[in-house]
Length: 542
Image (cartoon, one colour):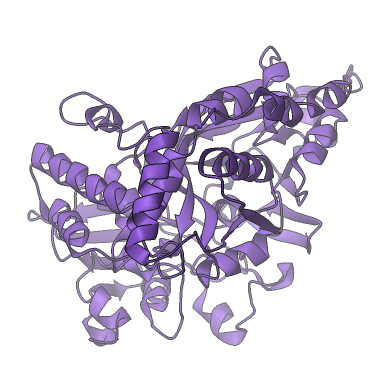
């Protein structure tokens, strides 16, 4: 069977001509206006309504983008992307690597004037672990002694080794030494919330007026599905280092509209360019391209027919021409994914983790047909039951879904339905496992294979596939306690092999970030792990 047709590719690229006519007019001159007189306001686009601004329930990059500007944990990132002290200014680690003692800074406060204390962290972390909270990802705390037992109803909160000894001292005991624990604590689930505020109103994070923060910004206005505005918090201990006063987040789902708004000067940056505009923008001095430690996938619900069969799942993977997708459609530096862990992790050998592993699959329509026939025979089906591919409306997801739909038709003669939803609805659909095959992307919490592979263990709160494999679980568990880095990476490679053979998810591509940043703005930090950091940005002209 032939590759995706040139005619189909041409259709996908027709929008370029229309968009190319939208030129970015130079803003009015700021003659006579010094740099320090320029109003420090930036306008960006979230792409949709954030799912939540409560760190305990956030799971998506849209919510994280705002949340990371509102709250600060024990550690933080500085303007150069280095890990530095955050709300804590001293950390002592025991000789055996199991006990961390954090000292909270003097004078740190919440945006409502309350003092920030070690007790806020104890409350917030145990709140995530409380089974009644039903937080998004309590499993990220399972490194801590007693955490898993409490969260799974097999232990008491009193036995969770998160203890505020006094207002400034937080002591955390781990089950085993974990070298990367400081990076784990940078996760959004470890951010503090104000106990008094949370307990006074269960909907405290639903409107701007109720949100109390301890980070660089507060929420000054939230017009749902339209705009969210954050303002620099004068109560933040490090406010003098925050150069951007106000950030307006629009909520435009359509990528083409977002691009046109940027060209019209209504936005100061585009975090993710529409695929059809990338080629024409590469010569623009405002264009930035950089890698992302993230994987674009489609997730199977392995308890929903027809994806109860691993061979049928693998058949779909072999039917995808990833090179045609990345090189002819997206063109933004994305790489075909022939494994799961993204590029960017250096192994003990000095090689990239990805380069050490084999290609677990490739585009091969004959192999795809063979696997499909074998799977149908195993299930006793004459033909494949119908299925729907679900995706969220924002960005390039519609384009990619249509390409996959065409490839499944051309290479497996399957008539696949596609269905889209706006982001907030889609997140609920995904978490409720109300799908057969659904789009999702995962970014690593830090540059290591462990956090992304751990997503698919049986204990993971982020495993929405209904897939479970004891061998995979054991390999991940062994890697966590293994202190020899060479052996640890061997275990992680073995785990990835199991995941790719069973294929509860289809890796599609390793993502890249293609952005436009106005030349009026300096100091935006771009990072392989997150959305643009706007805290240290500065507007240099109107």
